[in-house]
Image 1 (cartoon, rainbow, N blue to C red):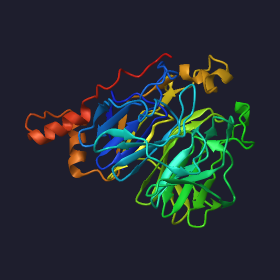
Image 2: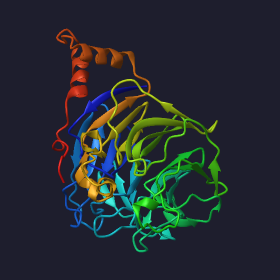
Image 3: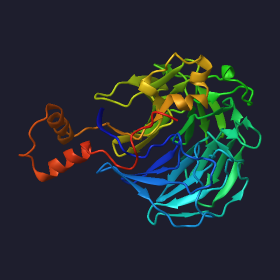
Image 4: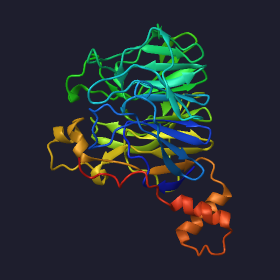
Length: 387
């Protein structure tokens, strides 16, 4: 397991949503300090070619009635060649309209749905299990409160259903992750609010329990885990590789800490362990995206404390308050690649790069690979340091 690529210049986004479709990664919307999130404008879409590491902005000329407005805190799931974007908000309002993006035609549509449509929210989670998209928890705009609800969308019939669950429900939360493995939705982390109504930061909780929803019986349980269980956090990332769940990064306001650690959970043994890849990984951050393509994980975006540490010249409540923290953070436009199975070719290219060996004797194909591994993208300016 090796961090192989680090490139700047990609989309500068926080709280975006991204999915992998074949050998491309599609990133939808998100937040960037200093931009206007009150005006209604079309959601931006960026696509990453995971072979060349090149980002490209996708332009659309479609009308506003079929294109989602620019937002953050939404989710996206892939089903075939289609991507379904749901939820999220801008600075004025949240949304519960389902949008569909066709990765073959690069066109948006609003599918016709029926059933019990969930209330508008952000900070929820979404995953696909057996042709259904599951939505869990999040912050309800119209109630100004959190929820414990589970909703599902049948992606064949486009019908929404409220899922009546039993067992030990997770407490109210947002900015957690939900991951599907073998018919079970695993929920971990997030900002927990026991009462369901947020009042002060002091009442935020960050549990490390792993919750599992058996989607056959619709029963919740708390998984009895062993090993090196990660510290509770929110705005982290989770992905699945070979039936193991990986958790990266995040933020815990009680511990006053951003993370860049990587943990692995094995559902067959209920065991956690911390894994330490070789190479230089990303700095501590939250609100990034992680997408798996083959045996490589692509991590991009997110936000970190300036200079990667919290400056104590400000009062504590200003440092870690959700809104006042924005001026203390920098938004990233970098891309990092974690290769679970680096080939001999990759290892040799990295050695050539680190030793600064003269490459004039290399075949053209290898020169091209070295170039794309080191050539920054030009989608956005360098990361902001004000805002």
